[in-house]
Length: 243
Picture: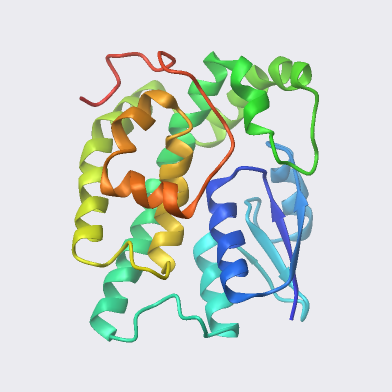
């Protein structure tokens, strides 16, 4: 069994799938596409425009981190990414769905406007990629790329302000899941793999890292995922930041 995975370097849902493939021991190759070109490239080969997108060696094509991880689990049951107890598994699946539908889009909506205003940080997000671009090119292109991504992700000023206001409650929710054992076990589960990469991405913005890293959720993200990217403190307007 093998797979071909189409990714954007540093994408948090792509990191979810990469880690799941590694845990399951499935051989895979990655095809890296720079944003926002991934919209056209994936649309030419898959039904939708998003990454992660995967093609298994039997021809099956899937897109979206939650759907891909579910198929990985079906193909390689061990080590299990869900608890054996049905009630505990239901809680993990609930947390996974929330991480996919609520937290994951927030990560994109907060990152792209911040990068638009701080293009000098762009090269740090390209580190470790297969398609390295010179730093001066990334800095020059980042305002245009960010504007496109802001439009795609509907990161309006109102939506971004609402996301910052909601973030403390979201962090409390994740910490509660860690406290009751839904997240944070010795073996990562599907909810861990869905939620932790978004937190890791948010913590590349140092204003947010200072507010997340010492919490249980921040420690979980640091334990499971280390991602590239660095936006220095002071980049986010103080009025937006949670206390």
